[in-house]
Image (cartoon, rainbow, N blue to C red; front, side, top):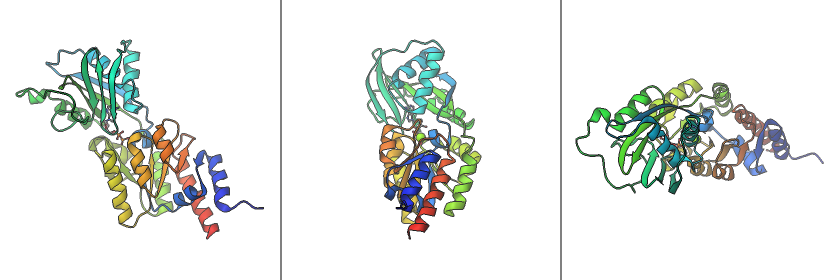
Length: 309
Ligand code: ADP
Ligand code: MG
């Protein structure tokens, strides 16, 4: 017997390095009219490096203290930013203290107790907090010099295209870390091919700050950028596109992407560094760590769909 076209396409996709989970999944991928990419770990290599360590004046912390505390809090997180912080601390020969009460908030950051102190590491919020939900007692002392505030330092690092994360200790801003990540070399070519295949240029949905997002998008040839999104905002963005008549293919890697992968018409997860939750939720997993596989699998699915109907 000859193999049904969608099954043949699955076998072909496997040879290209994409594991498609079912014939239905294969069919959905080719129906996409627009592709929505995550940024960190998807369009970028997902191996950011720590570029800046900035303790705030008055925090009483040295650069090494700040990095050691942040790394201890991040050691149980699988987020690419967390891995970069831990790797930098190890390279600097800093001891990694035990952390307890670890809690992770997808798209926001982490919280843990380190040597008796409550440490939060996460996205900068306008009020010098982290994006980590309340839990830390205390607030920024009134009258702290604004030029030294975490938000101002974060803004300066973001101006340079970095991802800034704020570190709070016992509820007070203690410092800011700046991280840089490289665009995948094949990203621009993949987005161009996808625009041709689907008829619509891809969009970028990211939890990162607007400046870092704009820089990555420009390099990747993406004009439509939505930044500062929480996981639920990524879902809302996907739903809005679908309500406007699109069928969306989401490509992502993180726990923060799982709800959007589930909400979309189809979802693709990055396999190498992808979180278990993203891999389980997606219709297909990119096993060969290369974005050229995305237009390849879309093209295979479209060809198979033409043969089926
Ligand atoms: P993206 O959508 O680009 O993959 P995420 O949604 O995973 O980004 O994260 C959004 C923002 O939340 C990050 O830019 C960072 O500020 C913060 N964040 C998320 N997880 C962590 C973490 N483990 N440590 C520090 N900051 C984090
Ligand atoms: Mg990501």
